Length: 151
Image 1 (cartoon, rainbow, N blue to C red):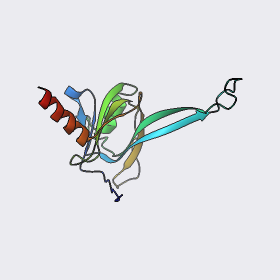
Image 2: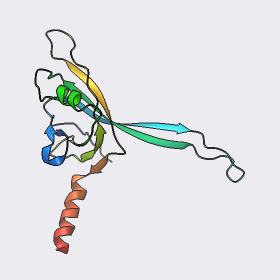
Image 3: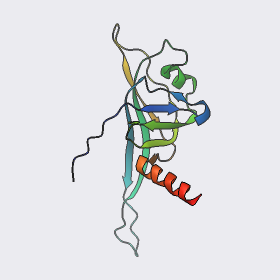
Image 4: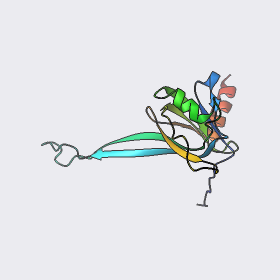
C-alpha cells in the first residue's frame, strides 16, 4: 500500500450554529481532534471470570491559535465571552481533499498574553460533547450521486 501523506491546509475551523458560525481559520496554527481512552478492569463474575476492560473514549478539539486579543470579535474574546457554552464546530483540515469533522464542543477560555514583541501562539483544549462525526469527500459524493439517481 502506498504512503498517504496528509497535511493540513488550506482548511477551515468554524464555531457556532451553521447560520451564524464564525470562521477562525486565520487564527489556527494547529488543530487536532484528540481521543483520551479511559480503561478500568471489569468485575469478574462466576459466568465471566476474566472480563474485558471497561473502556470509554472522550474527545477534545485542540487548537493552537495566534493571539488576537485586540479584536473584540476574535478567537480569544469569543472563547472568553462564550465560556462554558456548548456550540457546534466544523473542521475541514484540507478543503481540497480532506474529510469534514463536526460535533459539539464546550467552549473554554484560552490563555491571554505571552512574550513581549513576538507573535504569541497559545493552546486551548475544547472538550467534545460525545464523539466527532467524520464525513469523507468520497462517501458524501457517493451519497449525492445515489440521491440524484433515486430522484
